[in-house]
Image (cartoon, rainbow, N blue to C red; front, side):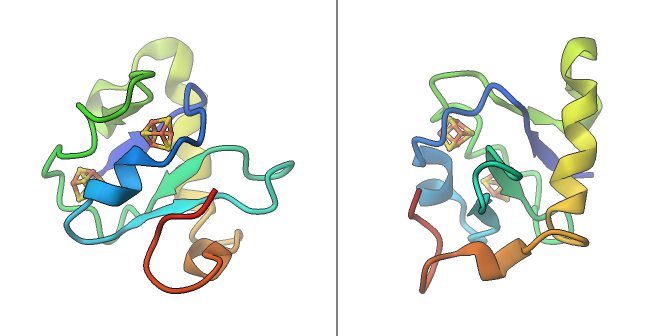
Length: 96
Ligand code: SF4
Ligand code: SF4
């Protein structure tokens, strides 16, 4: 499983700063990838990112509320058809 960042994300970046495996990436271009995204292949389900999000945007995949279920797919697609880690401006995580 993985954790999922939903459309409630406001891109303020706290989650990326606490992830121990550095698998959270800000979406770029913003028009196409408007939130941050979690690499489902790297996420260890540690849960550290959940309490630091003031918008309750992050959920374990199995617990994503029904209205936010459509946001699951883009989290996977960002790392397949989307830019994935190459969206980072440089170096490890951060950036808006
Ligand atoms: S902490 Fe929440 S609002 Fe901020 S980037 Fe992460 S998911 Fe988005
Ligand atoms: S659950 Fe843990 S490993 Fe997964 S994205 Fe959040 S902080 Fe990173």
